[in-house]
Figure 1 (cartoon, rainbow, N blue to C red):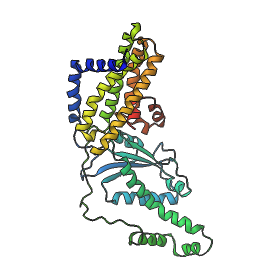
Figure 2 (figure 1 turned 180 degrees about the vertical axis):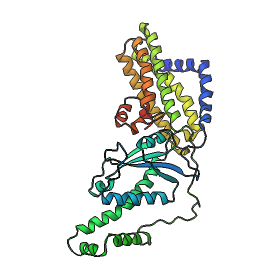
Figure 3 (figure 1 turned 30 degrees about the horizontal axis):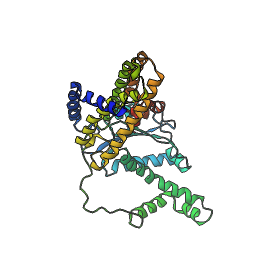
Figure 4 (figure 1 turned 90 degrees about the horizontal axis):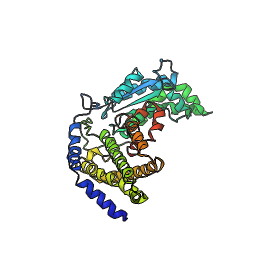
Length: 364
């Protein structure tokens, strides 16, 4: 039996099915119901970002007993973030639970959990996994927010690093520091930082306001649901193969491959059309040139699903077992994959667990 001819026959059979032509327009109009302004936008047109100063283990809010270095660093950081002229509005939270809930609900673009000994650790050179970032699947600005937030931290860390460097000198600089004091040194640092003698950027013809509006046109939920749809199509092909394999002529590797692949290929058609009609829906975020990497990502995911289902049908020889595994696996995909909420941002163990479910790979 020619596998290519069988694939064409399967595709033709699905294309002639009325359900396919019903599903196609439904998927194309579905993104229209998810428009609207992002709830993370504040009244002034800025995107809301949350942060909280926590205990060193990042479990609870800090009790306020900080070292002098940390106290100075966080005081200056709060002032810097509140006065910063950017597209983001930073809010400090006094509850880890409230911060997590607001991020999960989409009221915040993302959230940062900072250990109370952050500046002390950074001054000692300990930089590994000190800050925990909370984000919802709809968030698309994490790299930009990171640049702004971390620049605020480094701006307060730099004077402390300068003090440590001068104090470590055994001759003139250390004596000069003791003589002039830390405040005078900080004033000198601020002066040379902003007088143009160091590296600076000048923006010409810049917009008068940095505020902007962000649309939440199904950036993550539908992408994740599309991934589940493709996976379900593959499962349906696997179940059809079980019925066909009762006839010895159809119990072949090529037949199994074609029957699983054909419905997944058909399910990719409405997904691709959605990405073409709604570029904001894909990881391209409105950039037409970036739609091709998204298409490549889609077909790599299709290949991953095909390998997974081929292994499943090889291990599960009985259709009854597949019927038992199907709803459980799809439910776990919806719960553990970052489709509606990225639970791994709140519970690190779930982050590792999510990689066992294929939609997580597509949403990388």
